[in-house]
Amino acid sequence: MPEAADPFASVGYLAGAAVVTVVGLVGYALALAKRFAGARERNTVLRAQVGQSR
Amino acid sequence: MATIRQEMALPAAAAGRGSALTTILTAATVLLTVVSLGMIVFYAPMERVQGVVQRIYYFHVPMAWVAYLAFLVVLVASVMYLWKRDMKWDRVARASVEVGVVFTTMVLITGMLWGKPIWNTYWTWDARLTSTLVLWFIYVAYIMLRSYTPDVERGARLGAVLGIVGFIDVPIIHFSVTWWRTLHPAAVVAPTLERTTPNAPPQTVITLLVCLLTMTLVYATFMVYRTGLERLRDQNRELEQLAGR
Image: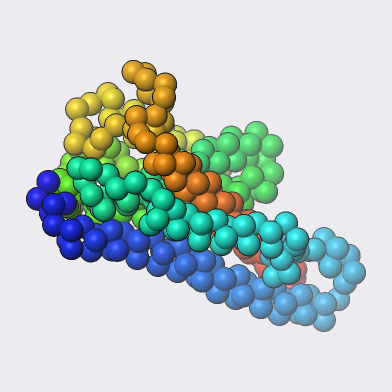
């Protein structure tokens, strides 16, 4: 267990894993919100187009 | 126009107007995330051998659980799609695959960050690690298959078959630590063939259970929004056809 005995290294790995988790979850949530906004905008445009063509 | 509006009525989440249930789910997820972080830092006991780095366990294991859950949902939704041929099941499968891949990616990375100080290596071709990597490849292949298949019905059919066959890897991952000699440790809280009670202090078990609940809520919240996005995209495809006529 080479680095587990070193408290500073251990805290570094723990912090790294925490950052990966937070960035992963928050990043995915933000990306999802962005894709949602894009799809909704496209939906509004298409509805207007279909409405005009009728 | 009124008919189109009725046919294409958006779910609350897809329309961006969170329903009361969606709002409660999102708020509960945020609240429980804060509680979990507090418990990991202040309540969970320090592991005697590994020290502070063992706390990675409280997000690594729940994310692995959510990945299993996500691919189980894919399995069920795929079976339901092949049986009923209803696109709503395909939407659930598509959404759950993506969320599952996100969680599996984080399981692999946090596992590597835990492995380095404990095993002195980020990666080893151990049965548990290798089968988890294979799982990641299977469902990345699912996403690629769906992206490269322009025929929606055909893509849904092929995806459903891959979603069912791919799940075979989940029990292999779970039992890999008992079937083969691995560097990855066996479960300490979940019951095994040898014991029925947790092999860990009660604070560890309670913290883990709270973190499991939190990650499950995170998955549920993502699924509500991700399924809504798939529905919106399907509607856009139909509207494009109508507009092109």
